[in-house]
Length: 334
Image (cartoon, rainbow, N blue to C red):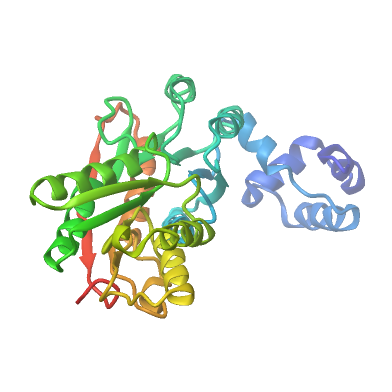
């Protein structure tokens, strides 16, 4: 590997002069800059920016840990964050925990060692020891969705309880009396809040029943599997309303119902998803959903990290709670 020493020897200058050229080129004489530039090109020298930042105690890398990268919402959310990060001269590094706390812990330890600019956590499964590590190392950290009640980290979240309550209330207003909640692991904060909101809506309407059907994943194939499972029930035991924990699940369920049964959406089964991913409005039956404004969501997460990183004083914990919006489309409107 070509080093800065090799460049100095080829250009017949000191190592300090090459370092000055790399960091403050305006302080280097034009003829000297020309010789150093020529040496760099001839040797193929590439600066080790990560090592330089580590020595300087600074970084332009903003790390984002998502729960699952196969969920389109996280991709759209990351896109909003990336654009906001670019506006501030930062580079977004994206990883997915895939519901594995051990893997997430390894990522966080790596970020702490590399002294990243900041960390945005959106997995909902971060263990206390990793949170302690980030807090102790004073790495600017923002928690997305999962830890709105923390007193150590700033957070940005959507009111998932309210969003779910509105979604299930809408189904009830459409005449649904047997509603299925299709969701993932209840230990994930976002899922637990959506279930809590669904139960609140059902409890407020006597005669309405809620059936909770957990899933290991929150993907289209997982939704398809649940849909096929539901279709195996006697017609009288089928729900007439379905609230899915995200749009991917909802679209898989709709695919199963549309391709393997005579049930009609929404006449026989009304369906509402969550997130309002780009595909929701263009599905075969446009999907009703709860919109999480990813642009506001993403920008606020980056801004909270930047405020911490750029401040010379200890900032108070800030909690941004964004209101969700129920988007009614054909899949639920009878």
